[in-house]
Image (cartoon, rainbow over all chains, first blue to last red; front, side, top):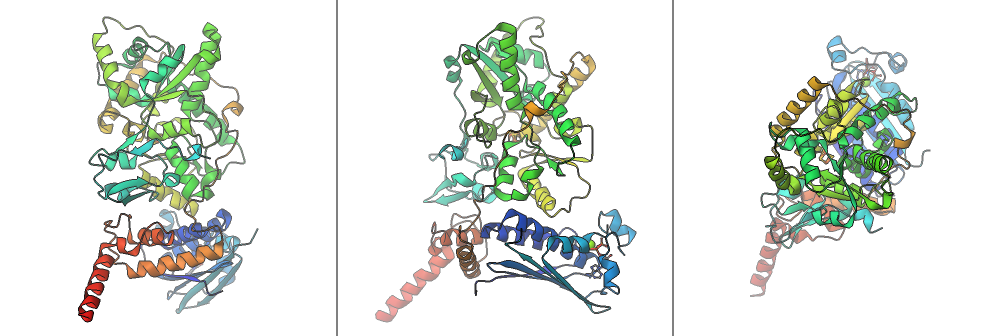
Length: 143
Length: 428
Ligand SMILES: Nc1ncnc2c1ncn2[C@@H]1O[C@H](COP(=O)(O)OP(=O)(O)O)[C@@H](O)[C@H]1O
Ligand code: SF4
Ligand SMILES: [Mg+2]
């Protein structure tokens, strides 16, 4: 199992046009590998949401991706404010996004729950004033 | 399946200079330059016509039927695309154009715009059903449907599963002629007068794997001059020859026509293949906020900018607009109401065509991807196109697919040559 495709991306802060590029690039790789459209879709959505969270809430960050024959693992980390109450943040509709962000069509409070829904394993490490790391795993043989 | 890869867009080898214009613009990276000539990778081509537009030597062309095809049919029906009306300036009204078509030898004219109105109604009904996936993506442009088939399998379910105006027009025209004049179906031929290369492919190799009801496709640019000649000779008041469509159907030729006609939801009209690619990328990530309908036309300014048109798309746009204003004022044309959409719904769905896949075996695909990564790393990263591939990464992919060599890169070749020179030097 030494066949692992690794990718690293920078997620620039406050750049809404670049947000989503990392997830698009991963989508293309998965399509080339012949991963099923269903898995491609789950990965795209989950990764995009984590990417946009890093942009909006985390002052930008990094994405690290590993793909092997059975799964895609994505780690999105930032050194932003962290999440004080993770349970609350996970609730659908909960958002601390300011009005200005909402006016841009972000901040519906569905991101974290969408990541959970579209991934097989989701883990969040977060510490206030230190930052947040979201780990996402999607298995290829999921039904 | 030979026919699956029929393409209207082809290369005129004699005219091709082997430059890099087309390889750089192809949205599916379907073109390479090999031995100084462009080569189209057939299974990747979506017939969008982008290469026809960018080729400075006019070496890319769209294969259409020759007007001689009409001779094989006793009763000839013209199906003019609404974009045809944008090709001629103010003196040449839609009525005159249609009369000229009859003078040209067609026995009947059924405007595709009339079918477009029906498709609009069918779409409205379709959009009301509960089990649709939003955003619904228009399927009127075959280049877009093909792009989705090869690159966005996740969006296949979002396609508007309604037949295109061209197909609906062919079916209704034949029915109308049969009912009015009792002409047997086998004696009729229906000919689409096309701005579009992708439509030719749709007729010759439909993606839904069934036979098209269109019997031939003529390029607007091939009938433009004969029509103009005939119109110039027309005298006096030209009678309104057949029942004509309303403004709604005619507007379909340009961007916004289809989506404006729909009376529900938040709709966007996107044109140009690159813009469409970007929007679809967002649609897959579900980051398109509250968009219910996407009208997507591969050509700039929609079908008015189709590769088989004559007039500049912006001029065609004003021509069409004038015609639409006139129609709106006259208000003489009633839209035929349809009762059910069933007959217009796709009978089978389009399939994902995983042509970007590196290997059927995922472990092998992973290995190949790693090789591509390593090779790309070693290439200069200039994306200069001199190797014949659109980017360094595309060359790496071609090498791994065994369709190219590393020394196709001129920088790699130079390295190798100087290596050999050094070795020779040492032998000396
Ligand atoms: N990377 C992050 N850094 C800091 N806070 C975050 C981060 N990701 C999410 N949050 C917090 O969790 C909340 C919910 O996130 P999410 O479900 O994605 O909704 P939204 O992004 O629309 O607000 C956010 O409003 C924010 O308070
Ligand atoms: S925009 Fe119109 S002319 Fe251009 S490819 Fe699509 S259907 Fe054909
Ligand atoms: Mg979010």
